[in-house]
Image 1 (cartoon, one colour):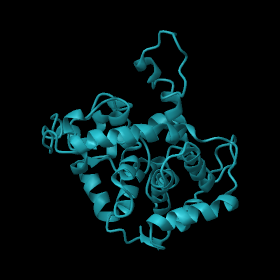
Image 2: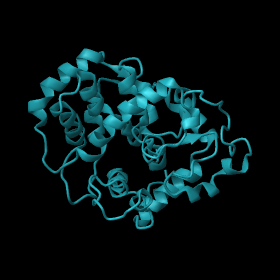
Image 3: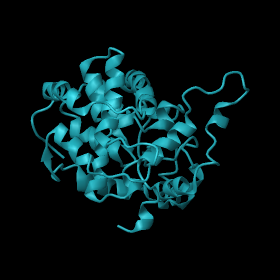
Image 4: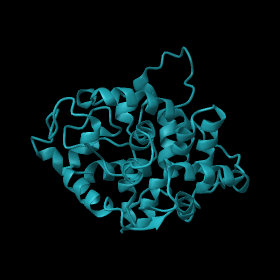
Length: 287
C-alpha cells in the first residue's frame, strides 16, 4: 500500500470532520441554513484528499472485488472481545488531545446507550458498530475503510460530501450507472443495493446472523449520511427501510457525540460486556 493511499493521520480525523459538518447544538436563531452547516470548504486538505480518493475509486467493479475478497469471512476466527483487542493494536499517535484506546472509544458509545436505558441488543450494537475498522489491520487503504457511504451502481446523489470528486470516478462514464436507478429497480429495498465498501458493510456481514434487524441497520447504515441525514435514495427504499431509518436516526447521536476524554474503566466494565456478548454471539465467529 502506498502512503498516498492513506492521507488521514488517523481514522478519527474522519469522525472529527463529521462533528464539524454535523455540530451537536447549532447556534439557535442565527439564520443558518442546513446547507451552511454542511459547508465543506474549510475542511483540512488531508480530509479533502481522503474524499477525493474515496469518490474516485469506489466503483462498482471495486465494490464487487472487495466483497469477493472479504465476505467469505476467512481472514480470522475470533470472539468479539478478542476483535476489540485486535482493533486496539491500531495505534494512533496523531491525536494529542486524547489518550483513549480504541476499546475505550467503543465502550463510551455503549455506555452512553446503556445510561439511557435502551435494550441490551442496542447497547451491544453500540459496542461493536465500529469493529469493522479492523479492515485497516488487513492492509485495506483508508478510502476502503471509512468515510460517508453511498450507493454505487447508480447516479451519485448531490448531497454526498465533496460530490464534485465523482467526476474522476470511471463509473461516471457509464450511462447506466449515471441514471437515477442505475442497476436497481424502484423501491427494491436497501438490502438489495451495494453501498460503498467500508467498515460498515463489512461488520454488517460479520454480524448478520446474530443481531436483530434494527441493530444490523444501525451497523450497516451508520455512515450512510446521504440517506439518514440528507434524505437521499428514498426511491430505492422499501417499507422495511422506512422502519429501520427510525432506529438508525436514534443511534446516530450516540455514534457522533459520545466520545470524550473521560476514559471508562475497561476492567470494571469488561464482565458486563462479556456477558452481554455471550448472550448474542458464540465464543468465536468468522471475520
